[in-house]
Length: 409
Picture 1 (tube, rainbow, N blue to C red):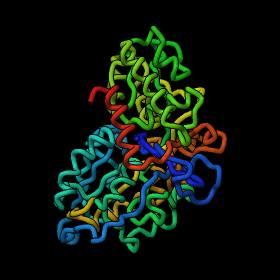
Picture 2: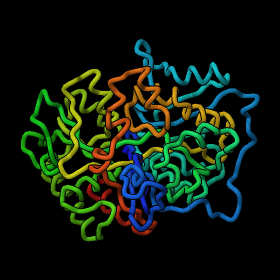
Picture 3: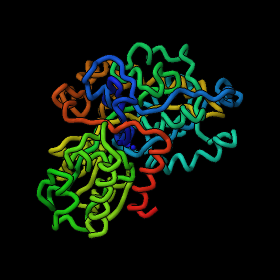
């Protein structure tokens, strides 16, 4: 998901990146290093301010058990991988990976938002210990932070020819990992509004979401504050990629007012999906792919592109320091850049696909998805998307503290 899912890339630009994924997000025009397609919001979505690992010593690594222990532990967001129609605990693409490589994946959906997951793993990382994970998928801005802090390993590119061949141009060179030495996008997506059309009229704007009487006490907003504040800034007529401190605090004031009035029921990570499904929430800030999946069980749940625009982001695969099965994790990264596998994954999660060739493979799976802009966005769709400004560490802490004060943590 979205900070989910969420943060996007830019200097020149980044692309279809909370981040961000289903979920997710990001950054400052001057701070982002873009690649190729100048002016493309998809390109702009991928970058976040941050530099490659500059620590004086090499990242600590553990002896790799991959050749003798054919397993790996993968942490990801909820609703972010394909599942079997008859058994929700079975993931067909992971089964195919096991058939191809002999590696069994212990797949865990334990990322609810970037900050809480960081808090979970950072004690081990700071102590130079194993986190219990070999692979994880985090949003651009958090991925940038982990790279900057020296907490993730470089990818052995001799094992990832599919990534080199098939990663879409718009996501190749985020400022925080210009050569993709440490990361590869898992999925990308946009953040907008979701609502239950069987219970309330369409929610077209963030102002409506945060003030309409029929939604009072039944609204959720995202703990990924770049998504939440980004959408509010857009609604205020501001540019999330280039705003002032006053703009930010004015947006926080809008959020505070909505929270104080009782309009907001809860600040959520991915868990808004269950609240929307069971009727506890009637409308919320949401990540695009999650909503598409929820519609399979409840067609009344709708995704809305807010009139003022959407946020865009990417979630990135990373191998943490002291991972026990680095080679196995690297092979899994490469596996998902096979266009046929990428199409299978994307047909289920229905986020923006980062793999060239997947659109052609999608035609063999589900032709109705080939022209879906939430999966393969065109220029018109991308023109409605925005990234969040890149921040230095001090500003990031100040803004996070202001947001968390409203959230109550």
